Length: 417
Image 1 (cartoon, helix red, strand yellow):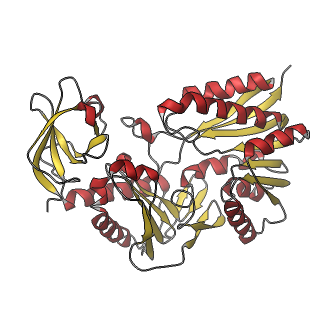
Image 2 (tube, one colour):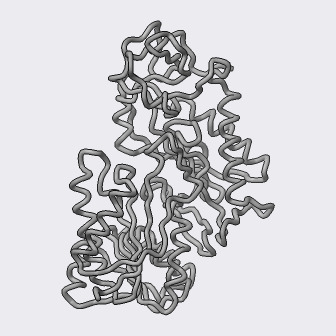
Image 3 (cartoon, helix red, strand yellow):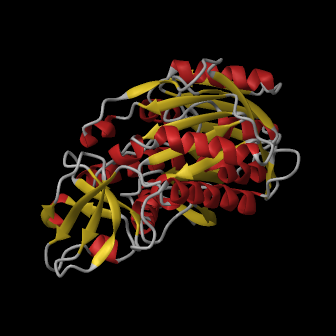
C-alpha cells in the first residue's frame, strides 16, 4: 500500500544536493531548481538530480527550509506501509541487540537494567522527524515533520503490534509534539493523549532506581534517557563524596551518586517543579536523607558558593543546550566556559568534574577546547578520566551530524603545581 504518494518530482540545481549525496536525508529549499507535477503538502515525491538521475523518495513541505526529507533511496522501494513496518522492526531489533532485551521484559546493558529506551530516533532510524520513547508500558511520541506527522497513527499501530510480539503490551500513548520547531514546518504545537487517558506520572526503572516520569509536563518527552550510561559512570567516584549536581532536572545524576554511597548530594535546578519531582523520586528510593535541593539560577548559585569557599569531591554540570543554531555558538561558548570555570573552582584538589554539552552545534573539538580554556582561567589542571556520548538507543549516524549531540567528559581537577 503506497502512502501519501503523488506524481510530483523535485529537481535539484546543478552541483546541489551535497547532503543527500553524502548519505543524508535532507533537501533544502535553496537546493531545488523546480518541481514537476501536483502534490499536497506532506506527500511523497520523487527527488531527482539536475540531469534526471533518481535520488530517492521523500515527503515534501513547502513551508519548511528542509523542503524534502528522504524516506527511501531506491526506485524499487517506494514508501509503503510494508516499508514503514520494516523500518520499525529494524529499529526495535537494533535496540534489542545492543541493549540485551531479555525474557523478563527488561534491557540489560553494561551493568544497567531498565524498562525504558528510545525506540525511534528520527533520521537515525530512517523515519525523519519522529521520536518515540518507551517509558515502562507507555509510549511518548514527538512528531516534528509534516510527512511523518501524517503517518503517525499508522506508525504507532505498527509499533504496538511489533512490541506485542515480544510480550510488551502498550498501556497508553501520549503525544508531546509541542516543540516550537513544529512552527517551522507550518504545524501547530500539540500535546495530549492518543487513545485512552492514563495517569501521566509514569513509573520507570533505570540503573536499579525508580523514577516517576511526567510525560505530560516534563521537559522534552519527560526524561533524558540519553544520559543512562553517563549516570552510571559517576557512581565509581561518588562513594563517601560530597556531590554538587547542577541542572538536575528530576534528580537522576544526584540519585545515582547517592545510591553509590555519596555522603551528601546538593541538587540544583531553576525549576521548582523539577526539584519537587526529584524529591519525590529520592523518597521512592530511600535517599531523602542524603540529597538536598536548591532552586535558582545555577550560574548565580555557583558564584555564591565560590565566594563562600565551598568545595566538593564531585561537581556535575548537565546544562541545557546553550546553542540551538550555528549563529549562537560563539555566545554559547562563553556560557560553557563560565559554568565550567565556576564548577572547577568548587572542586577540591583531586576531586572530579563531570561536564557535558547536549548541542549538536557544539562539536567535540570545540567543547574540549572550551573546557581546556576554562581550566587555564581557573588555574586548574585537568586529568581526563573518560569521554562518552549519548546512549546507543540514540544512535549516531555518521551521515547526519545532528544525530551526534551529547559529549560527556569526566575529569580529575588538580591544582596547578
